[in-house]
Length: 296
Image (cartoon, rainbow, N blue to C red; front, side, top):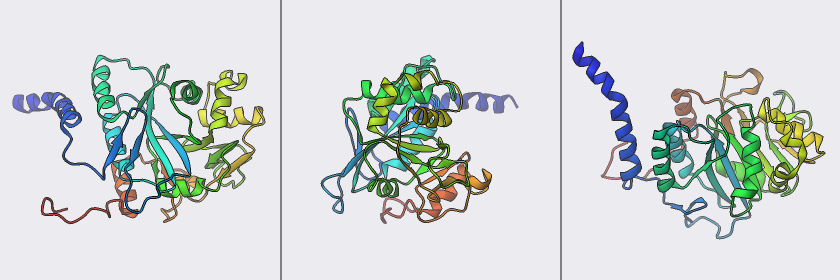
């Protein structure tokens, strides 16, 4: 028993060492080549890619500083996806750091991946984080995007279908997502679910400058975004992408349905078994080539 206790007590330290090792030395096994710059994470062109994107999209995944494993997993998920018609950047978004180890480990992530935005706020779910995210972007980004998305870290986004669904949409006054209540198909009824919704850049600028959003920041944040837009008579172009966006089967009543090929987003992936089911269904590893170096 004493030996077993010693082993168990050593596991947290071992996990931290493995995390640091991955950040510093993970240079040999990678998904298809990705270019890391100071402001973007974009896929390198493939022979089948168009040389000119038709629009740009920033996806901000709202998460927490301590979610190291989830961020690494999502980097794998989105690092192997691309769209020939859109320039898509994925960033991880959270509030101010509060622990000494966060300042070290997250600094390593930033040095290695350059895909993190740290907002000037305290970590919260319904106390203004979404407002801080959107209202900060025009000031902190060195460029503008056609669209900005807010996404949860328990949603699987398929970037190519997402881009295709945005391609014909207006670039101005756009509010896109999964409309609530679940049975509704009318995007003007209430608001878009927080699983993942898109605003055009002009609406992001409006959130920064308007007196409406800043005075309504406490409460369910996806619901508040709909309230802001309705009070400001904004988002005249609304699109609810059902049934392509939905909750994982069996997790949320009428918001859920079976996995379908035309999926854009699957939400409420809380357990690894659910992620595995989704990744199997969409055959995300189909590009893996045969090699003498591995047997998968």
